[in-house]
Length: 77
Image (cartoon, rainbow, N blue to C red; front, side, top):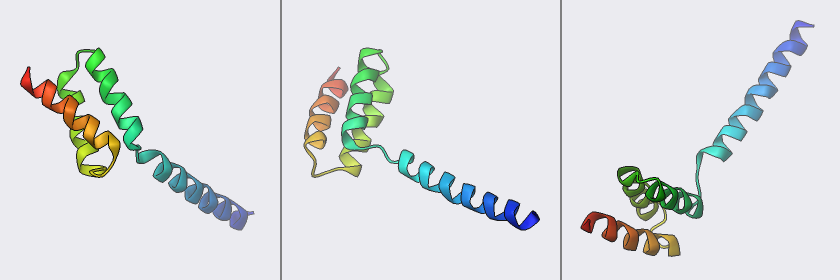
């Protein structure tokens, strides 16, 4: 019985680690959508941080170009 409990705990730990790893990395599109939402909520500083993350994490993506444009506009204000 104890062996089964240890084995179950081990598998649950592995599954949890996989799920957390999958959820932790946001895609460029998700980051961009979140940044736009933050702008709409007048949370300028957080939007800037998110746009900067897109540029660093996904420099060759179309979202990096869009993020740079939004960042330039936000920083000009």
